[in-house]
Amino acid sequence: KASGRSTYRFYQTEMRLEAERRHQLTLELREALQNDEFELHYQPIIRLDGDALSGFEALIRWRHPKRGLIAPAEFIPVAEETGMIVPIGDWVLREACRTAMEWPEHLKVAINLSVYQFRHASLLATVVSALSETGLCPGRLEIEVTESILLSEVEQSLSLLRALKELGIRIAIDDFGTGYSSLSYLRSFSFDKIKLDRSFVAGMDADPGNLAIVRAVVGIASGFNAVTLAEGIETEAQLAKLRAEGYHEVQGFLLGRPMSREDALARILSEARPARLMRA
Ligand code: C2E
Ligand code: MG
Ligand code: MG
Ligand code: MG
Image (cartoon, rainbow, N blue to C red; front, side, top):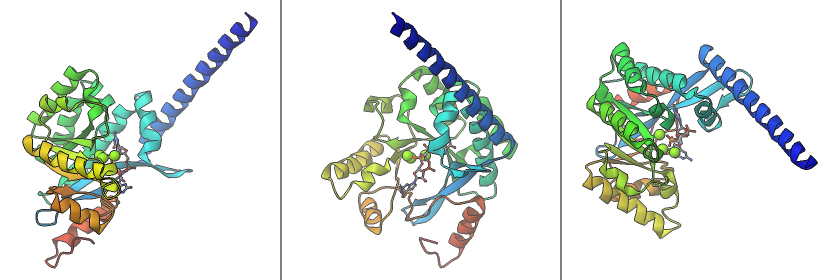
């Protein structure tokens, strides 16, 4: 009995500490947003047909005044847990659209949307106002979502995806092959692009199973008329292999690391020179 009571007290303390931690993190993230501490880095996406720049994926970082540059894996889950992902996601959207307006019109920008952003019906209005305020053509914006978006509240997610697509925005599935959903969800929405997760690219040589998946994705995508992109290309051998397998686009450290807005612009200018090399 006595031990039962102390266990109860223990849980109460734990819960209070957890609530305090979340509160503290919410304040920190809100302050970071107010102080303009977030930044987007841009990673090149290359079209293999012609080896030309197709656009960039915008990836968030937190330039913390004391802790330095913090990767999204360290704060996006917290932002999702505290609801701060909504205002942070709005900032990402606007910032990415503003940046893409500095680029030549044939270049696209891809942003990552969290499944939590799809739980808010306000998402659509946010996207519409970001496009109209920045003047970016919807066809130049690509939204990346993971398979987890169709694991719960499927109807709301599907109707938001359809509404976004109707605006002319392209929708990509990110980290394809790593989620827990069944392939049947592919029939419920026509995704414009499938981004093969980098774990399959990394494991291509070591394990024939990975190569089988790399190939299967090309088959699936062609059946749905979707563009195929392979993530995480780090070696020339991987690049050659994915080219041979018929991937449309590639992305990875070999083609360019995520870079600042200024460096992305310099990359665009260097690619525009007549004697263009695939890597800057
Ligand atoms: P993701 O969307 O799949 O982005 C690709 C991640 O792989 C990026 O990590 C990128 O730096 C990394 N990467 C790219 N090429 C290579 C490569 O050749 N080798 C290796 N080892 N890694 C490579 P990053 O920037 O740390 O982002 C991690 C994840 O955080 C993203 O995965 C995405 O899910 C999430 N994320 C990033 N920015 C945002 C954002 O603005 N909003 C939301 N909701 N999530 C974001
Ligand atoms: Mg992504
Ligand atoms: Mg990805
Ligand atoms: Mg990933």
